Amino acid sequence: MPAASLPERVLLMGRSQHQRRRGNVGSGGFDERRANGISMNLPFGDYMDEGDQWITIFDSPYYPDQLEAAKTRYAPVIERFAELAAQATDTQALFREIQSRPPDIRIQLLRVFRRYVSPDTTVEMLKRIRSTEQTIERFGSRFRSIEAVRGKLMARPAPDEALIALLDEHSERGRKGYQLTEAFFIWFETAFDDRAWSIEGPTGAGRDVELQSILADYQISTPADFVISDRFGSPRVIGFARYDSDRGGAQEDDRIGGNARRLREILSYNEVTLGPLKVVFLNDGPGLLLGSMWRDYASIETSGNGRALVTTLKMAQAGRFTADWIERSAS
Image (cartoon, rainbow, N blue to C red; front, side, top):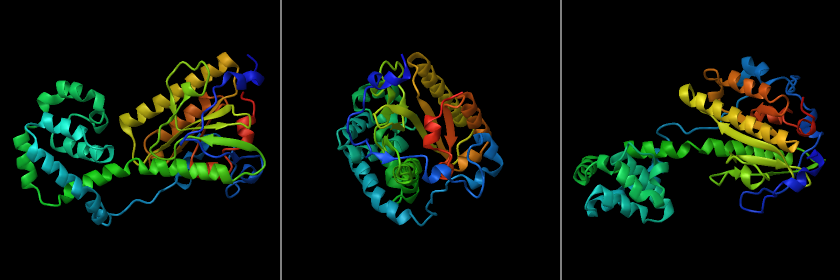
């Protein structure tokens, strides 16, 4: 199928809470800029020695400065959990009761439940209401007894600052990723003014863009963080964003392997459809400087043969991510 007919092969996104207003990106503006005279057209690996100059640091609160605000958020949650524990016949019944609560308080109660009752499970696992009985069947035998839970609750100070600090730290984990994508969206939509492009995707805790829903005959379930489309509504760039504060080790290997696989799958789709799709990995944070992360992402970019780009937010703003790159024919 010729590339010109790709719009006919694409299922266009519907307008939703995840769709951003049309922005303009062109060959002017940042496309022609260079940061301090340094070319932004070099391979990602060439910037490794100066990587600390290109990562974005989002402010983090100092301890214990944030603790008073955290008490306001989480002390009532712990208090409510203690009330439910006092009424429950056993911890399986406590779990079922928590699952009946409204969504916002339910998730917070489950975080406390996991700490006190079921550290073997994850909140992601516990929060699936339809799987409540299956979770009990699989892990209920390892739940701490309700008597032990009540005793541990009674032994803790009120408010329990240690638990509050743990809950507050968990709530911060995704915030910097949201800040990164929001900053990229704002820059994308305002930095250029001579060609029309649109960017779509969540900038907060919304649903990712599922490629099967926007690409005709795409066979693999693949959530993306954002999609950039041309003026005809055809997706041209698939974006994956990640802010790493301190990743490394096995988590680093899993992340790199997953991104390399996604790139291969998208490029394979291009071969079948003769499509123009490219992939951008918006990666940022001090975790990029850990281990072999920078070199591994450079390897992914190289394997894309011109159809993959790795960039930090600062690099994108300095001219690394451009309309010219989107439109340029890959090697």
